[in-house]
Amino acid sequence: MISQGSFENMGLNGTLQLHDGITGIMDNAFAGSPLKGELVLPRNLVSLGEGVFNGCDFSGELKLPDGLVSIGDNAFAYNWRLMGVLEFPEGIQSIGAGAFAECRSIEGLVFPESLENIRYEATYGDVGGAFSNCYGIGSIVCKGTMPPYVQIGAFNGVAKDNFTLEVPESAIQQYQASPGWSDFKRIAAHRELVCRPNVANAINTECTRDLVIDAEGDWVVESIPDWCSLSANEGSKKTEVTLTIHEMPQGSATRTGEIVFKLKDQDYRHTCNVSQYNYQYGENEVITLQKASRGNNGGINLVFLGDGYDAKDISEGKYMENMKEQVENFFGIEPYTTYRDYFNVYTAIAVSPESGIGTVNTIRYAKFETTYTGGVGLKCDYDAVFQYALDMGTTVTKENLNQSLIIMIPNSTDYGGICQMWEDGSAIAFCPLSTYGYPLDTRGVIQHEAGGHGFGKLGDEYIYHNEFIDFCTCTCCGHVDAINWAKGLGWYDNLSLTGKMNEVPWSHLIFDPQYSDYVDIFEGGYMHNRGVFRSEQNSCMNNDIPYYSAISRESIVKRIKAYAGEEYSFEEFKAYDKADAGVMTRGLDAAQTERSVHGFQLPPKIHKGSPLQSK
Image 1: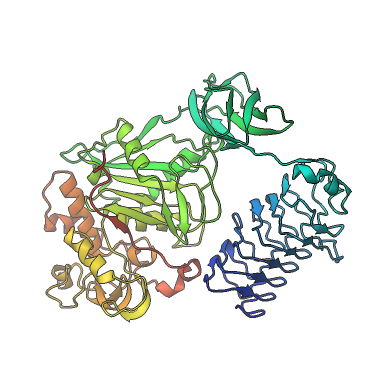
Image 2: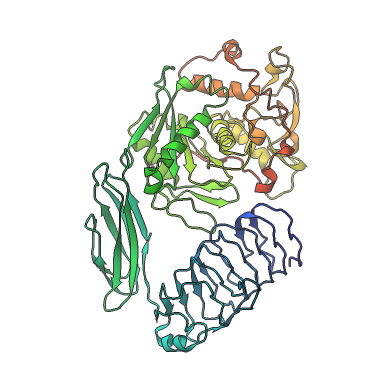
């Protein structure tokens, strides 16, 4: 149980994930705390008090746990960024006055058979209805054969004549006669007919999209734009169909239309919205952003791909603008600035069905299925991404994939990032377009995840636990084994499990006149403040500042030289090394950054073997 007002007006920020053992949250527990991220409610939650999350500014879709019975007055009021269809679990009995008032981005409601009442209470400004001023609601489904009691005013501000209230066929007359429900002008039987996804978009190139029609019986296509075609215009129950959006001449104006599916013998329809936009490049067209001019092996490959960019985003130039910006961010730090000419850089126009990236609560249809996994973690369809990179027709091949880096740019401004790595060296670095302040901006994310982990194979230096790494009892541990595994692969040169001066990987730098002023042995790294050691007080691998430590720069240059087929020389490294690269940032205290409000960063996830093992 979380007590009344426990975290009221606390200034908390980011995603809020509550422990599954919590069964109740009392009045105003988090009211006024501008969390701004997503809310993950406890699995065993039974009751929510009054004003619990009033004004928290949560985003994404809200998933209510199965055991929830009651929602208090104003519980979620003024969370205007909550979106999608809000489905109430079977077992919910009461929704309080103003519970979702001013949640104007919610698109639909599904009420279960168990629901007994939806309340309204007169307030100043008339926001006392459970769904007052939820202007975005465009669908409501009620599963109860007995209409729940609705106090008049509960749906004030909802456009009751713009959509059909869907109810059990046997209960249509009861809803039409019930106070609160009778205000809805269109009440009809609820039917099962849905197209997933219910949006499709394209740029000029002819392309195909897979749709799944899920119906309770036979269905037909009632209408379709003349610039689209389907592999089947009728079917029964669940059917997969292929939509073809035909080529549009360059320079044409945007065209939009609807594919209307209809249940046979029923006056019930579902719509898929289709759009096509003009753009200079074709779908999946490869663009070479840079060709290597140094090295003996044709260049080291970087592939920048965006996910969650729909055709509208792409046609407006957002995709290419973001890709080019991230390329400059990657090379905007030493030693990549000095050794930039060793790299080939590619991108391709990857069109997603929807704009944005999915999360724990929110489903978004993205080309590579990139989604947040909770907190800052991300994943995608790895097989699809690696195959896409191989099919681009660039210098990326099966033979050099393990020396190439794929940098995935999710279309999201939320802070996050992780590098998914394989033992053979293959990697996908996820680098969202973070708008958080320096150094946790998108520049900091890509230099840490892509430049640090993905290519440099460096370990994390940040500290979360006041414990020895080899005696840590927290559930996340196993970190000694993780470091030893990485070191067995030739990675993590910037970390050591010993503090002996002659055994650390940077021992040759400690007394070198070029580095001795700041290279030494500092305890703390890989989440622990004891038992693991780093070479400098601070670096990009700690808190994303634009500076790699000297041993990190050397490790990156060794890798560049090896992949380029050139011999590494320590003296040459020192000659070209920008030793003053971090003068302005080396002293930044990690405690001054905002990381703590976003939750823990995650170390790279290292997968066994190679992503090509099954290919």
